[in-house]
Structure formats: C-alpha cells, structure tokens
Length: 362
Image (cartoon, rainbow, N blue to C red; front, side, top):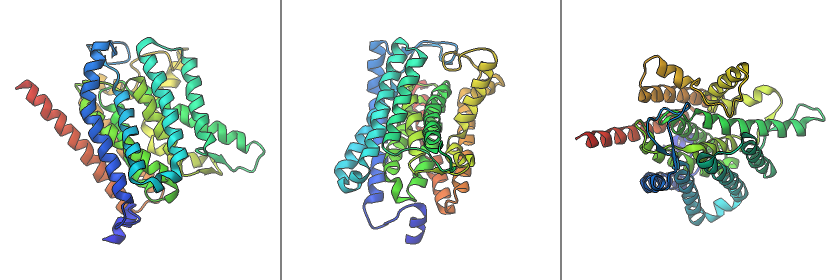
C-alpha cells in the first residue's frame, strides 16, 4: 500500500506533507463554496453584473464578481498552509508570492474591465508585466537550441505562453460552468504531476488551492448560473495554470518540448486558436471583438443544452489531460487516481447543484 501511495505522489505516507495539500484543497473549496452567495448578494446591490450581450448566453444580469471569491479562497488556503507547514512553504515562498502577486494584478485589472471597460492594449500590458514577474523568479521556459538567441527565445516563449493561456481561459468563459470546469480538470491533473517531483512544491500547494476554489465556484456556476467568473476570475485561472505548468523548469531542445504543458490546456488553446484565426480572416480584433464563434457556440447551435455542452467539453478536456499525463510517463496509479478524483469532484458538485434546483422548483 505504501508503494502505491508513493507512485500516486505521496512521498511520505506517514508524514504530514500530503495532509497539508488535502487541507489546502478542502479549505479553498469550503471557503469559496460558502463565500460566493455573500459576494453574489453584494454584487447585485452594487451593480457588478454582466448584461446580456453577443458573447454571453445569459438573458438577465449576472453578477460577475465570482473571481474575487475564487482569488480570496486561494489566498486564504495558502496562508493557512504557511502556518501549518512554515518550513515547507519557506522554500517555495518566492514563487508562490510571485504567482499570487501577478494574479492579484490581473484580478484587479479584470474586475475594473468587467465594470467599466479597459482598452485591450492596457490589459495586454498588465498581462505582460505579470508574465515578466514569473520570469524574474525563474518560472519560465529555458531554450537550449545552442544559439545566441536562446535566452531571448526562452523569454518570448514564456511571455507567449502566459499571455496566451490567460486570454484563452477568458475567451472560453462564455458558457455556464465551462471555464471553471476546464480549469478544475487541468489543476487536478497538474496537481498529481507536481506531487511526483519535489521541485514542484510551489505548484503542488498553489494547484491544490486553485482546484479546491474552482470546484467550490462550480457549485454556483453550473447552468443556470447564479454568478460568473468575470474577466477577473478567468484571468486568474488562466494565469495561475500557465505559471504552475512551467514550474518544472522546462528546457526546450526542440519545439516539441512545448507539447507537455500544452496538452494539459489543449482545449482552450484549440478553441482560442480557431477563434483568433477566424476573426483575423474577417479583419476583426480577436481580443476586443465579441462573437458566438467558439466551440461551445457551435455545439449549442446543433441543439445541445448548455449543461450537456459543458459536460461534453469537460470530458474532452479530461481526455486531453489524461493523455498529457501518459505522455509524461506518469505511473498508471497516478493517472487513475487523477481520473477518479477529478470525476468524483465534478460529479459531486453537479449532484449538489441539481439537487438545489429541484428544491427551488418544489
């Protein structure tokens, strides 16, 4: 049994390290789950809501402050971890703080954009600063092609990755439960990967908090949604996932070295790529032009319900993540544990949401 636990990622079954990870996940889940209804009520009073538009499918104003609760849940869980395991956290503190600080910038900019609107170039500038912050603490691709341009190429690829994934999650957030569910699936898969490697300690803690908070948010975001992420939440999810996927100090000797992290987030990458290409071909700005040209819009046009589209794309994202784990040579026990943990979490929040809806009907 001890050997199986080690292959899953529990390096010391008798130690407290894995218990800290479980506690961080549970605390982020519980706090976000319970805090969001209060955020929702305040957001409605303050007028923090998305009106029906060309991009979203809601027919009435929806509170768009879900990202604030999600970010608060992640920070709270990581602060608790610092008190529980100060020695563990101290070794990775600079990277955790960098991710949280860059995330805070994007939450702030995203929230302001949600309420008042900001120019696309300003949002891109702040996203670039957040990407540079990661590079400054060593979270980056390291190109090793044997050319003088390797350092600059590594920085460029890191910038492209972070900014691209940050916007990909945001552009995908047009259907109830979709972006949050895909982020949860990727966070859980990356969590099981990071648990295999001691030098991913920062990723293990951040991913546990992110997965818990995303699952707690989903309880209120499944169709019909009671609150949405907004740009603040979608930016934070995309930024954090892009950062944690780079914590393995990936050295690129060929461009195929980009494949492992890309597989974990392949669905938003494919969706955003086809949207960007189509909009550019029409002479439109991909970041500022709303439209119903995403994969989920095409599935809805075929007659599928919002909930079924979300479930279908969750399944596709999960397949991509399991393939990514297999590509990395992860033990089959870890792949199976990731699959079970992810599906149980999604099944649980779906059941709780549907049960709440039935109660409302009665």
